[in-house]
Image (cartoon, rainbow, N blue to C red; front, side, top):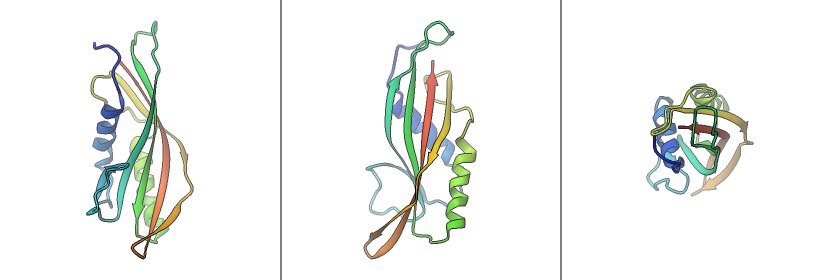
Amino acid sequence: MISAIYATPRVLDALREVLAAVTGITGIYTEGSVPDSARSDYLVIGPFTERPDNTMGDGRRWGSELTTTIKLVTMNPNIGVCFGIIEQVIGLLNGEPLTVEDYSAGMATLDLSLDTYTELVSGQKVWHYGTLWNVLVHQ
């Protein structure tokens, strides 16, 4: 077992791995790193917050509590299709064990769904469907 570590990059990798099963998207990106070549519909993970959640005495040593957003970015005006993609994200993650490198336990839980907003990009409407997540990991 290693000492306390920075969980964010490991959790990001774990989320990407799970979300690879979502159908109807063209990619999974990190907030602030979406390439200009990204094509609708895609997921964006981040930004993250992370704070220690060390639990000495319960058999685990180091842990972290993280929050992050996962949002669908789409040019598809069909709300049913968009909600279907968000439902897949929730079904894959909410309350399910999350395998995170260097941790023995991990889980993501949906905190809330954010109001959808629209922006104009090069004259095209782009919808953002956001969700906010809590992620706990322990060694």
